[in-house]
Length: 224
Picture 1 (spheres, rainbow, N blue to C red):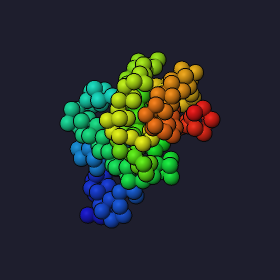
Picture 2: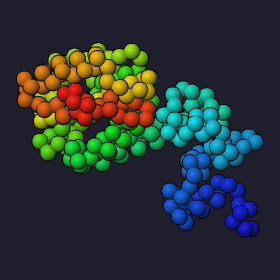
Picture 3: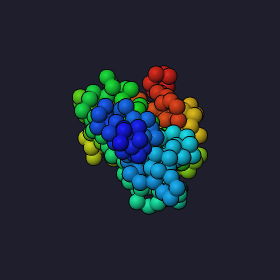
Picture 4: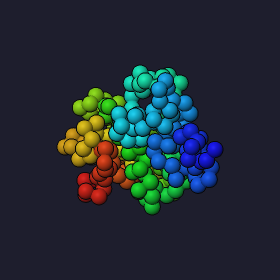
C-alpha cells in the first residue's frame, strides 16, 4: 500500500516521525493528539471541523472546558486532555522564563502572559515576583474581578512581596474586552502600588496590560 493511500492519521504520524512535529499543519497535529474521530469522521476531519468552529488552535485550547466537553467528537476525556495540554505548555513557558533575566527577555514575558491570560473571561490581576538578578521566582494571581475590573489591595500585595522576599515586581492584568489600553483606574492603582512597594524597598519594573493581540507596557508609555 502506497503512503498516499494510508489513513490520514497514520500519514500524520509518519510525517511527524520523519520530519518533526513542526512540519504538521494545525489540523494534522490536533488529529495526532485526538487519536480517534467519531462516527462518520476521521480524526483529521474532526480536527479540521474543530478548528473551523473555534477559529484557531489557540482559541480551541483556550475554550471553556464545559463547552469543549459538549462538542461532538470530544467528550470529557479529550476535552480535559486539551485543558491539560494548555496547562502543560504554560508551565513549560514559565520554566523557561524563570531561567532568564526578565529585563532581557521582555518578548518571552509577554508571550507567556498572553498565553496564560488572553482568554480569561474576567479580569485577573497578577504579580511576577523577582529576585535580585531579576529572575522570576513566582507568578501569583492575586485578585479576580468581574468583566469590568478587579479590586486590588496594596496591603495584600505588600504581604505577598514580603512572603517571597522579592526584590522587584512586575504587575500584570488582562482586559477581557481584548483591548490592551491602560485605563485611568489602572494608572491610579499602579501609582498606589508603587508607593506601597517603596515602603518595603521593592522596585516596580512594569505593569503590563494583556489584550488579545498585544501587551501594553506602562513603563514604555511613561506611566510608572
